[in-house]
Length: 105
Image 1 (cartoon, rainbow, N blue to C red):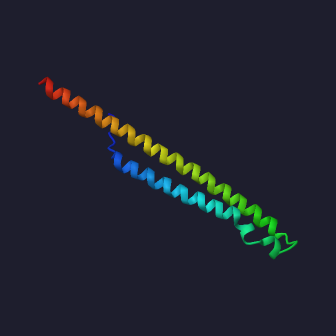
Image 2: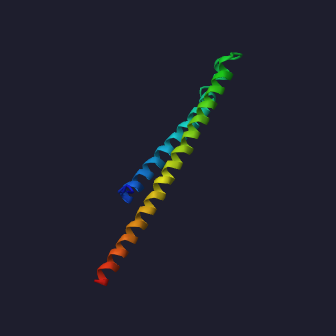
Image 3: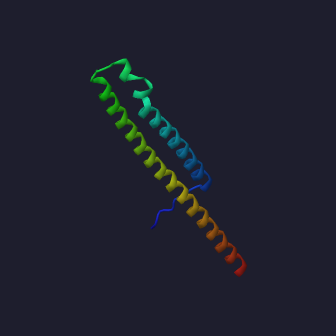
């Protein structure tokens, strides 16, 4: 027997919006992290230091990781949107079928 799962399209849409907001915030954080070495003026503060290129590399990798997280979060948001649309269509189909059934009696 198939399992029946009940979903609420409005809640799925709200979930999608929440994920989109989180993704936007993480994207902003990624921008800040990528710019951190320059913003901190590490090159002038630590001239000739090996810390500067290491910090720049590390910040670049963190920024890339945050951007990858944004992509994954966006995919989850899109999936929630698609599920909400499908759930609404299913509800509409069920309502139409029930209405048709009630008229045939």
